[in-house]
Length: 477
Ligand code: BGC
Image 1: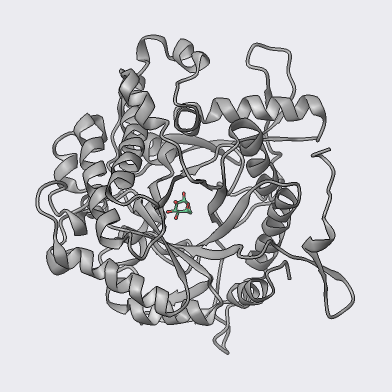
Image 2: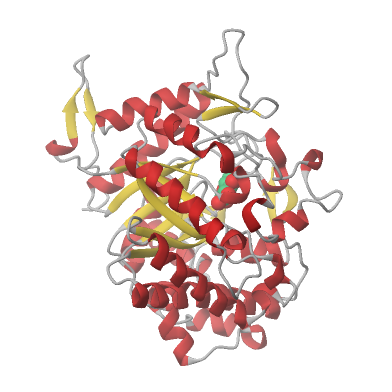
């Protein structure tokens, strides 16, 4: 049953040209996302402490072209104008991240009122513009002071995170209803603590994030454990401070997409998806590490207590997942693993980043498999989007037709999942503005709004016009 494309009549409205327009449920959040280090700049303003990215980006050779987030898109000082740009684009929801070292310059201890005040003013501005604020507590900018004490290798970091989360619940939770705990746990853990090797055009490419460590498997598994523990302790602390908040992670969903939709391949995709996410979503959503994971990790398994597991498995209001690409296409297999990966061919179409194969059906399969595996109450797609080789025309336009095609394709697939009953409540496109693409620097542009990094001029692209029309009509245009 669930395999059939079954658009209920209420999900279709008639288009001016006579064709039908797939529409989304009422109150679907047409959102857009950013992260503090990638846009804010002002690294020392108003008492902010250093983050691991402030340190890492200044290590020679780490960042493409030596780019850093020192200025980025100067959002810290231009946030009012940026909210106006988003309002004019028809943005209904904005996912922004809070910089932990702006709030706790030393990671722990006394909070910095001026740091809190920045986000408070931002939230007021958003609400005035009719944009629903969604806060992310951690988008990778750990206070350097905590890194100096062991960072995510130390269990104390999880507790410090819960204390910070509780403060934010108290200070912003009167106006921000939805909070995401940590962004892409799997990526910041693995890429930050040992580097992740991915295949690009058949070649191995290593991707690294701050703090750029090279730890053993046992150590990385312990870091993973501290990350999921931080999530669980934060959920508990925020609920204690302000009951009624709506909480969940913004993890990355490593998806196995069935290469051909057959019952056996779909089963294989479920097994693959659970396996790929066993250290993260699976333990957060089941409150236990799977036997398969613990057996495979053996002596490298993390050290944990039953109390840890019950915190990690705290009930959630929703699950947020970033979905750009699947981990792999898969097919059924008789072997012990239960699935076989099908590599993409060398000519498989790509978006602007070398890792970004164009596989829009992951926005159908990802939510659908999450739903069958873990039955979350609600799902948010906390990121999808693509880099493109954007150029300004002499008339000052950016005609990013590839991004428009990409967005239409992923939203159509998401619509299919929703039409089959998967409870997706909103989608946040990455990103509002061109920004610092981590070690990729400013050359990799993901924004719906073009940034001239010399003048800081904002120019909405063709994709922003697409977004505005889609959001206005709540459908795929
Ligand atoms: C991250 C963003 C990043 C985007 C594009 C996600 O992994 O959360 O910060 O810029 O992907 O690479």
